[in-house]
Every structure is written in structure tokens, then in C-alpha cells.
Image (cartoon, rainbow, N blue to C red):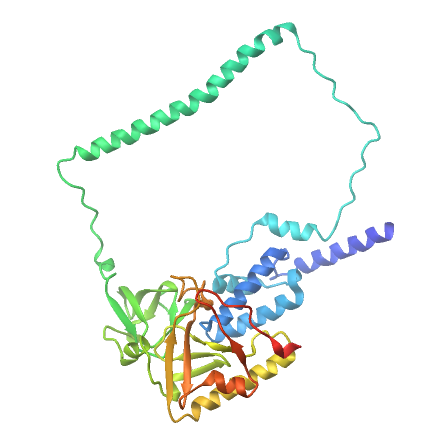
Length: 384
């Protein structure tokens, strides 16, 4: 028993010394916090909306959390960057303390062998006689107090209603500043991939990446920057990257189109980015192996071959056709994180043949069909 206590004390001391290192977080992550961070990192990387710095940073964080789990240690700068990129809520101190306290169990206090029983308090005759009267007064207080509060509330609402009806002139809302009257104006992104930032400067954090042709609401201008509103929320973009005239790619992105090979960017074996569309496109009808966090080494190898083969088909095509289709999600959720990680859905045809059929025939993908509002679990035959 003494040796076990010594081991526990040494473990606790080593953890304390690691936590006290300057620049590192002083408490470990709870299991719930660890799962939440891993899930958000995975969703962010799958969305295809992260820039190069975020891809590198989040990949590093994902590997670190996968290796160390709840024992992951981050510097203050790393935790601040992770908090900003993933928009995390601050963890409650009780959750962090519970994960640290669980690792060192304290011996339970010894209970006394004697069982002390509480002696019943004798009831006097006067107390017994006055008990019903006190119970009645207590019940009256419990009923009257809420009743008085309710009457006062309805009286206040009634007085406000009467005063509003007695006005001789209708109520007019306060004037909106001129800087906010441009809410109904829309502009279009004129470059291939443009960062939307949290403030009017390149030193501010990137909150999203927009593709050419994306339509955004223009709020106001400040110097060489314009405040805009898009799916990512309110942010800022350089005015030189915006135009009030819709580019040709915006008109083509809203319908079926015949893009050029340079308009299609390959992300993996079943995901592409089409110029002019505001989100990546998940190709339907088949499922290719994952290259990001695969289940096994074989899946990663086949996934890289499928990605390379899809790029070869697009670059060597005489004709390319793209058709956008509705995603198999609940109505009203397409284009949001609740549907396919915010991606669109579509089919890509090279020289008149669906690219999925070619990859399936070459053993680089498997058929994958979804219903109207949901999809079955993804098949993974590469790890058998």
C-alpha cells in the first residue's frame, strides 16, 4: 500500500512540474474537451475552407491530440490560435479540475465504528397546538407572494399598452446611420480565393476564404477595406477584390456548366473545387479512400492514387461537364455545416463519362448511393 501511494505521489509531482513550465497550459484537457477539439479540427479540415497556414497548424494539432489525448500540452500562443480558428467556448474550470483530480485518488477517510443516532427532539404541547396555525400561515405566504407578483406584472403591461395607444403620432424608429444603409447592396468577389478577415487589416485573423463569384452583402467602407457579411459572418475584405458587377463565373456557377480543366481543382478522389462556386463539391455516386486521417495505411495509399488519377482524367480531357445536384440532407440545411460539412454536391463528366465510373472500374473507388435526406455509413473495403 505504501509503495502504491509513493508511485501516485511521484506521478502527481511530475505532472505538476510539467504544468508549471513557463508558456504551457497549467491544466490538462478533459475527455469531453479533447473529443470536442478533435471533432472541430476534423470538420474544419474536411470543409476545405482552411487556408495554408490553418491546414498546417490544424494538422499539427490533430496529430498531437491523437497521440497524447487528454495529456496534450499547448503553449499559450498555440491554445489562443486554436481557440480563434475553431471558435471554441472557454472550458469550465470544474471540467478541467475533474480530469486532473481523477488521476490521483485520495484515500477515503476512515469512518468511526460508532453509529451515532440523532435523538428525536421532543415536541412540546404548545408547539403541537400551534403547528396547524403555522402551516396555514406558511401556505398563505406561498400562494399570496406569487399572486401579488403576477398582478403587478399584468398591471405594468396594461399601463404600457394604454400609453402606446394614447399617442397621437405613430412611433418612428431611430434613424439608421449612413454607414449602415448599405445592408441591401451586394457585391461580388473578383479573385479566385480571397481571405475574409476579422478586421480591416492583413494583421487580423482569417475567418473564411471566398471563391471568385461569391456574392456578399456590403455593409460599409473604411479606407481600402470593405465590411461584408457572408456565411462565415461579418468580416472585412480588400475593396480591390470586390465589384458590383457579377463576373461571368457567377452566372455559370448557379447552373450546369462546362468548365475548363483549369477551373477544376482536385482535393481528393471524390472532392473538387470548381471556380466560381462558394464551397467545395462532393462528387456523388461513389466513395474514394480518405487521404486525411485514413483508417489504415492501405487506405491512404489507394486514396493518393485515386486523387492522382482524378487529376489525370481532368487534365487530359477533351471535354468536361459539371452538373450540380441536391445533397442528401434535411431540407434547409444545404450549404451549412449541418449538411456535408458545408460542401455542395455534383457530378463530373470527362469525355462524356462519369469520373466515378472510371475510378470504380479501376479499383480506386466503390459505389456509394444516398437517399433523399441521409446517407448510409461510408464503405471502407481498403482496410480489410
